Length: 575
Image 1: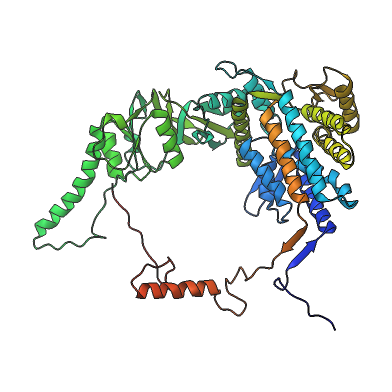
Image 2: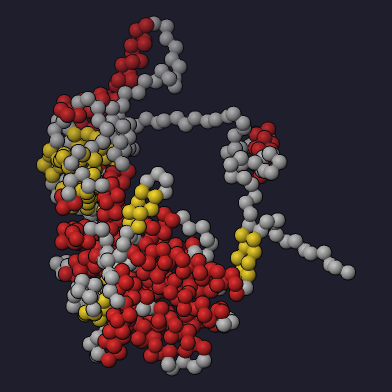
């Protein structure tokens, strides 16, 4: 007698398990790492990604993987570690994916031969622990005192080496170091703004030691305003300075036509009281997140004040940080204590744009990059490059230690792991040795991308690191071919960069190895109709509407779901 099968999963569910699906996941991760392999290093190539609306040109690993919209569930793990590397360190987003992909490639033969994934994971974690300890041991500490910027400049230059603006390191590296130095100790990079102005030459880019933002939408009277102030007082508002008529949202009954004029006069008096309060506060510059109308613009212009409405929230936050001003939600009771100040305020023409610039701020904890360039794609990639370099310099200041780049640290860690593997008995020796070999992917790919013979260069590096007592900092000489002491060449990276790369790559490899079954559930409903199979609404929606109706009948509150054809309106409050 045949027993009936027990069905636990929805019809159409795709399940795969065992060794074949683990190998399939490893293959998917290898395909993903191969996709960005050629972007590594100073000679890495760029990728052009077109999503149907705009084209993006980049060689930043995290940016490319985000734009690719990877669907494979296991391969998404590599996308995640690239994003975490970008958020944590800013640089090394391609390296971390290559190391993880190479670790999995070296583990693949063990999986095929039947080694249990838990054994592999245990030794991968052990090898990673040894590698991280070795990087910490090799790291060279340095003094980050003000004025000692040589180390930071070299780290910034190394981060820019592989970017589109690598030929302009002499311009951008000092600007990046100065921008990070201008911040608080916690170095919040949200306070460093990057403004893009298409046109002109990239060498026309400059750094504002303070705040700069584009001229906002302005009314008649704006051109009559004074555009330059020395040591002005600055008032920041979150108030709408416009004449608002009450006729649309208020009912007023009058018995005499003269009473109507008094109502109109009262409306005007409200706005004039607000404007008088701003002028009497002693401020010469008035900035608001909300609109400043034509009446207010002309009023301030007549009295020698500068005003700008609809200023972006990020710019207002930076102005407050730089000038010491406090944001006000009302114009009542304005005192000197809430006003900010700066040494110089002026409006400058940059290309086709006009910028309001505040410099010599007393509490300047902000900076603004003004980027120029021929195309939007170039400027967008320049912005990403500057962000990466800012993160690297920030990480240098916090870790206070650097290592040599160019594949030198990976080769030294690889040599160390090979030596440690000889002291291990059993399968662990082979697994740790395989992890040691996987570290060589960085110098090998750097050589390949530069058009060099990677086999010869890796042989030379192994010989240097094994036999030369002073060879621990030898890496790939991309400029002239062969190998060189990359520490002496000034190719430096924060030690936190390499530690994070190795740890994140190992973690991703262990996550992939720990998966023994992949289940893909079919979609429960068509995304186009939002209905169930027979054209009815989903049960959750019907239940929600039913509960809303019952609650309303009992005088209770609704859950937020409104009946069919019902909408709601939000009112606007004045200042």
